[in-house]
View (cartoon, rainbow, N blue to C red):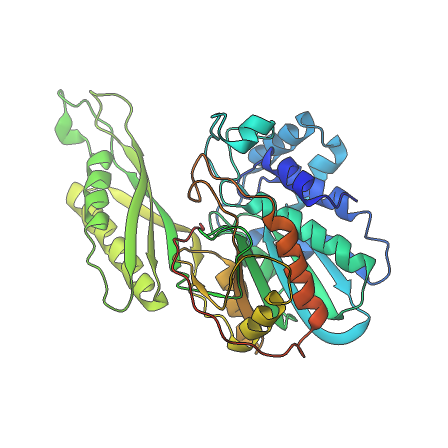
Length: 440
């Protein structure tokens, strides 16, 4: 198994893939972990046991999955493995049982990229060093590093099982569209988890900085609206037509004008609008995609209800039909003090010249919140930690990158947290550092 974190990260970076079609990525993770699968105390799981496609919004079609498999084959994945991954799903889970009794600790590593073309500027390290994405997609949020860390942690713990309890490493697809956590939770992977650790690289912090928790994670609902009207000649018989584009345009302005909510910070956005055939035909179909967010789950739900009313009103005004589909969602997350304190104490035992923080702002959305919700509902604890990466550009930017020196620091920290166990002494003294966030 490859244990060079930088090499792993660069390999994943060069092969960024989108939600639920991460066939090359998942096949590579499976191949790497297969070297550990026969070791004592290690269990590798894939397929329906770790992901329920029926619980996933907008799961890819057979044709889309076949295309992803062929893309992976063309990029060097063994054909049988690529097709099996496409058929079974791209989630991968590894359980490692320690030599001492203790809790079940889950570590989430998200693996998907973004629909973004990577910069070819020579100042951009992946372009200069030859590991920029070979496809018109990009790891612009650090998930390449997260996947590498998941493999590094698996190798370290499987080689030396001197730790309490069981560690479950969750290689999760589709975080960027907040669709990947729910079908894995539906497969039962949170049912016995006592503590959940999420980790994000970057978030505006310098390389070497460690934050044991984060705050401000936002609830979100992503949705798509389809308007269906009636086509007609725009000049010869406009009265026979029903203009779906006009309804979509009115809905767009109405959604953007939704009043905000004093219960929390709120944002709304319409990201895409597609409609029409040509200028002399009344458009009979229009599609828009949008999102609402808030650091209050209740306010987010209210924003979504208002968006639905806006859509209904626009459809009624233009005499068209409209269908709203929620395609992804996440909720807020409050880190548990006890787990945060233990992570902070472990951070102070890691060799780094960076600053340790108890918590930093993360004004973003992430379906790690759904994992946390499921774990906390049964009495467990959760945190979302951050490791600085001195990123030269913001998350979701074509020049985003990681200072790769953050990788061994992050691995050492996660390993320290796990090996120390729940008896780790508490240490709660640190001051949050305000930074901009990232996420889905």
